[in-house]
Image (tube, rainbow, N blue to C red):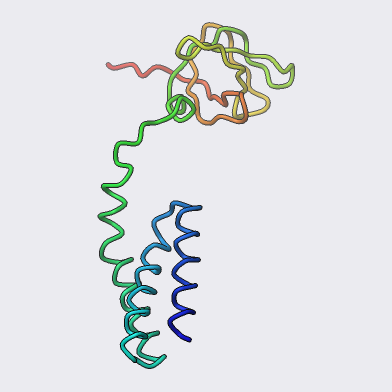
Length: 148
């Protein structure tokens, strides 16, 4: 009976891992697998629970950091993520109240708004992208650093 419960738990944990891809529940699924083995060997419920917790937490603590480091290590930033932090030249005056403002980033024209509702940025000025809301760049005025 306990074997079937552990098997159901393992299947549910694997499904959650597949859906979320968070590298969290997989370690508990491995713990459930070891608990199945303990159950099949005749171990009592308390032993099964102890093995499940020890194996799951041990796997989570000792192997997750390595898995996270090497899985998806070649992830490339999307266009969306690559724009944040860039300094752009404003092509149309930015005025949140009037609902206008544009900039060209990587050859694409974006609607631009300032972080502060009341501030304006003139066309030709530089601005730093701090966020993206929908299809609008959220920027702040950028002052070039001068060296003395």
